[in-house]
Amino acid sequence: MLKRCKFSSVMVILSFLWVLCQGCTTTERVRTVSVPRDKPYKVGDTWYFPFSQAHGYKEVGIASWYGDPFHGKRTSSGETYDMHTVSAAHKLLPLGTYVRVRNLENNRSIDLRINDRGPFIQGRIIDLSYAAAQQLGVVRPGTVKVEVTALGTPAQVQRTESVSDTIFGGIFGESETETVIYKPADYYNGNFTVQVGAFGDLKNAKNLSENLKKTYGHAQVVPSQRGDQKFYRVLVGRWNNLDLAQQYENNLKEKGFPGAFTLAE
Image 1 (cartoon, one colour):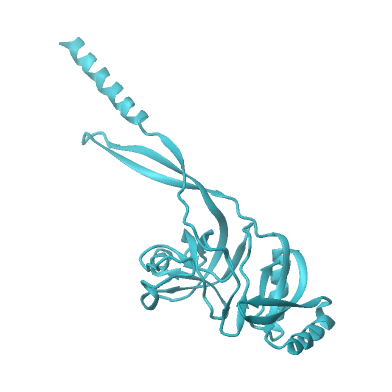
Image 2: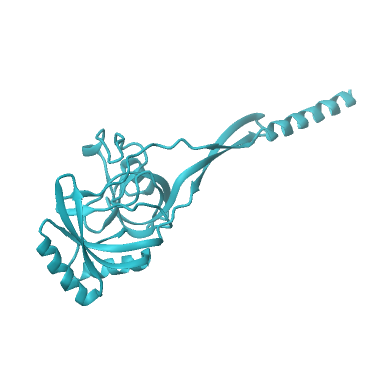
């Protein structure tokens, strides 16, 4: 009788260990969403030229959120906007880029994908979906200071199955967690400049460019075409570091050019 009890105990322990060993890690390729190539676009009187590549982008500023009026409408990526799904809009980051947004007031953070353009209110750097805003605690205040860090595009997802148990209750349960492995994004290295304005009249663009040269040393007028419309962009400075370019952007805003923004050449 004693031997039979010992044998039963050993079998229970072995069975328990076997179940624990079933917790495993698998890695598979992430299904990516196809989005259109980022093109220059115009909102009001301002033209925006999205970054062409991703590399180490980090920015601190104000986040807002958008919901009902846009729910069910088409986003810039071509997807249908679902306010109950985690996503966000950004003016310049490539569509499809994943970013980590951290609420600097409560330290909550969330990883999400940029699938739309905006916000176009001065001083705001990212527009969160309602679901993302809920998780970060942004819904009630409406706006909050955040840190946005580019993660890149997803390369692989690592799924980990684990076993949870309540020994005394004799109940076994399984859970699964996912860890996304991102293809690194680099926004820091490259050629950057600051666009101060875009004009339909070449003379106005040249006048502004000449005035800016006196202060910043380098300014140029670059003609651009969008369909049948031709316009002239005034660009100031040329740097190979994003942080330095953004410092000049902030300086230009303080000098009376609120529409200035950094772009990758």
